[in-house]
Structures are given as structure tokens and as C-alpha cells.
Length: 222
Ligand SMILES: C[S@@+](CC[C@H](N)C(=O)[O-])C[C@H]1O[C@@H](n2cnc3c(N)ncnc32)[C@H](O)[C@@H]1O
Image (cartoon, rainbow, N blue to C red; front, side, top):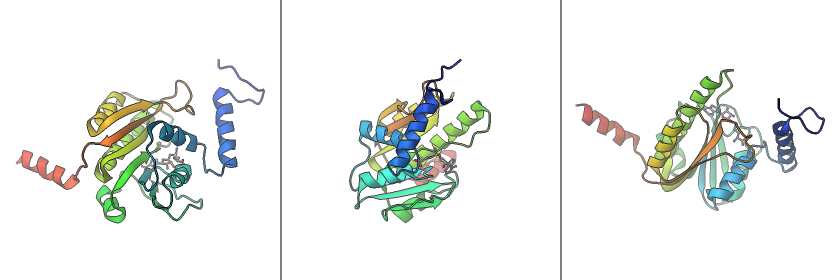
């Protein structure tokens, strides 16, 4: 049985999360997830002034807040989530409600132009069955990766969350195929043994044109 510390009824993870939550509130962030992005960004240098960033699964908005600060006034942050972001964000940010499975990446391109970075912190609602949750998380990851390959400029970067399941090695291969560098990581805010990982891809090799892909397969089929 896990040891409990501090007498407050919280295990190590609970205590760590509680202090991260309090710190996030004190620093004006909408959620403690911000420290995961901060760690990823410090390690992989994804964000910089002037960059245009797409944030998938952006609610309640802490990644958008952090990203807006990093990209500055010349940058742009576009967020998408099933839920509406309610916090006040700088004018360089635009969030909208939508399902990543239904959003057309070409419509994103037409509306916002090409992106330098795509982030995804998407997580499925818990079904109560960890196998189902991992599978759904892997599907969300794959969808985020696909969108990234369509909306990123060549050389652009990608970082996304996934609950590690049986499909994890294939996801790593997919990111390696699309980006020059690929690295999986557990952030410090993630407890030991948690299935939560992030996979970072730096340097998109080539942007995918979904119409051209359809044409190629149509030709192969006929
Ligand atoms: C852990 S939260 C993201 C926290 C966020 N990074 C922040 O810092 O505030 C995960 C989010 O993924 C969103 N999500 C899950 N499935 C989605 C989908 N199909 N399309 C869009 N967003 C989705 C959820 O609504 C949820 O708000």
C-alpha cells in the first residue's frame, strides 16, 4: 500500500498535484498542466517569439496562457477544445469549440494560415476501463499528428500527450517518420508508473496535402 505523507490524507502524487495546483492559481494560470508544457518547452525549445501555435485540447486554457507569453505580440495562438475556454486571454489568442475528429485541417489552414508548432494535451473522458481510455488516447494522438502534418510548415514542431498502450511503439514510428527528431518523455508532473507520456517531434520533414494523398490512393486503386 502507498505511503501517505503529511497527515493531510494525500499521497505523494496528491500532495505534488495539490502544490502544483496552488502554484498555478497563485501565478494566474488556469491549470497545473502549464508546468508540463513549461518543462517540455524548456527541454525542446518549441516556442519562441513570433511563432504561430495550434493548441488541441486547450481547455481550461493554461497552455494557451503560457504559449501566448512565449510567442509575444507578433505570435498567434489558436486553441480548440470540446469545451469553451472561459478565461480572459490576450488578443493574440483565439479559441474555438470543436471536436478534433470533425475539424478539417485544411479549413484551419484557410482560416489561420500555416503553423510553426502544434501542441496537444487532449485526453479522453475516463470510461472506467483503462484499456479503452488508452486506445482512445492513442486515437486522439494520431489525429493530432495527422492535423500537425497538414497545418505545420516544413521544419515545424509537434508535442502531444498519449496514455501509453499497445499502440505506443507504432505512434513513435509514425512521429519518427514525419519529423527529423522524435523523443518520448514523462514530465516531472507525471507520477511514476502513470501511462501518461508526451511525444515530441522536431522538424517536420514535409507538409502533407490531404487532396494529393487522396489523389495518389485513387490512382493506385484504379
Ligand atoms: C488535460 S485537458 C487540457 C488542459 C490544457 N492543456 C490546459 O493547460 O489548460 C484535456 C482536454 O482535451 C479535450 N478533448 C478531449 N477530446 C477532445 C476532442 N475529441 N476534441 C477536442 N478536444 C478534446 C478535453 O475537453 C479537455 O479539455
